[in-house]
View 1 (cartoon, rainbow, N blue to C red):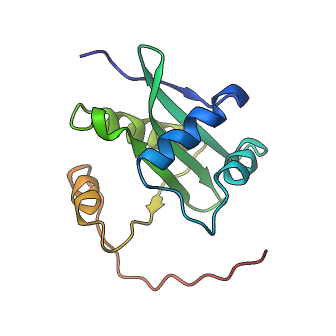
View 2 (view 1 turned 135 degrees about the horizontal axis):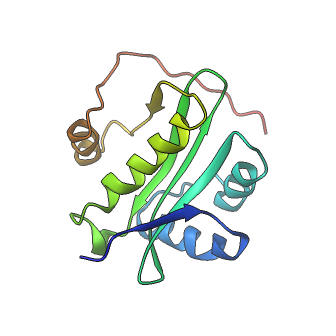
Length: 139
């Protein structure tokens, strides 16, 4: 198995990244992936990590922190490449990125109906914490 090469996103990656997110069913009509990517790229407190095998983008994760906790979004692994350890690798890279910045806890949100993804994160040592998540759109 070819190892996943992980790096920070470049402008030339955006189209392929959005294609990966669409393939992984991560996009939603109320979120503009182009805007989300550009927002993450514009700050020192966030980035998008991409993972490649033989030059093809097959994994990603948007990672950032707010001064208190780290958060990951848009964790993707090409469905044709799952079960090869790439999801573990991209998550390990997000954790390393946060540790390098002194962040000591990582929060992530998973849609409740996505039981397979919840099980995946549990295998990585993540635990469910009872919380009520509230939000308000500002746009």
